[in-house]
Image (cartoon, rainbow, N blue to C red; front, side, top):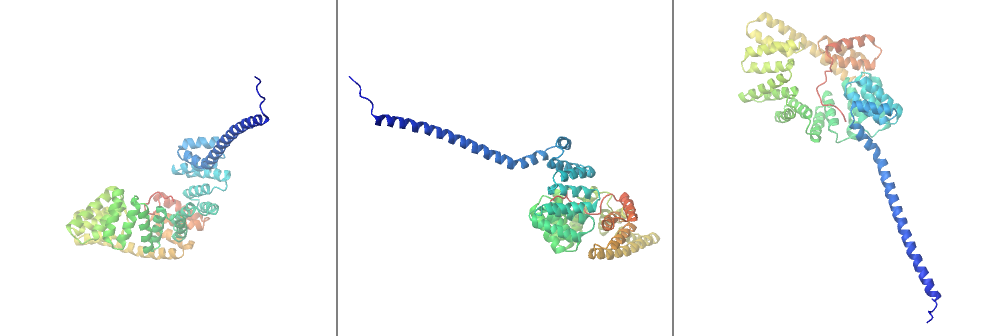
Length: 430
């Protein structure tokens, strides 16, 4: 039996069917390759975008020695240089930090953070005009970053220029409205400018934003104490002591708060307990001895009070109230000659206090008047306020940097008061 020839139609159909199947397999392979390629490209793009963040995280985890090794291996890596400079600054070596930040600004002149770091290290070395220029450069590079105006405000504030500090802090608060430390610093500056209502508003906001900072509660409590809102003052100062049990100022002001409540055995007991805790935290603070001595006088414990008052004026010869209280006590004891000596010192210090207060008011009104700054610095120095003198000499020299005589006077003041007279506060970072 002869098999029939396949028809042309069946051959054509079979051939066409085989062609479709091979094409489909080829298209699927291409789609898979394209899909893998697109996923790879997307992953690469994500990695490129995340790389700066990943590098920041890695650099932040390195020690000073590791960062030093990194900048030796990669001398033009601006990010590594910035982290290295910040680590050196935290370790208390501002001159080495300045060198690192200068290298960072050379490697990448557009990085605002490097200029902020440079400003901070220059400020720590009292190179005030250069620091101000660095902060202004950082602000011009990144107007939306709060760091430059915040640190510029700190520079102005620490050198007796609160009006200029206020303007910068208001800018920082606008840029970072939920930054508690900005509001805290703003509250302190408002307080120095006698803008008490605005200070209260700023400090209350700082506490709401970050309720775990003892300094915020402490300074808010002090402001309530000044307003005679004793219940609010007690609440805030007790919270400050809970967070920082050895904060001498919080304990001192808490003792003063109890001392201003209605005079009962319980309020006196609470006041004495707080003041003795403050004294244990800072046994060489004349003001604490004075406050405790005044409290014991009210309780009729004259012998203990006398010892505390004598120690107060020995530790701080500028405490006019110490001399007054001691003079009055000695007068009651019949020690007239000694009492009169102490009361004469009180009169002299009171006169000086009025003179200083008058000059301080003038400086607040005309903060750019270099002559007023120098007069106030010398007045502080004459009456034993070496810390205040240091601040005013620095403010003066920022305006008149070529005055060699004032620079020598500043160095002599620093030897007796290496720290600033500014009130204790938290580590200030925006």
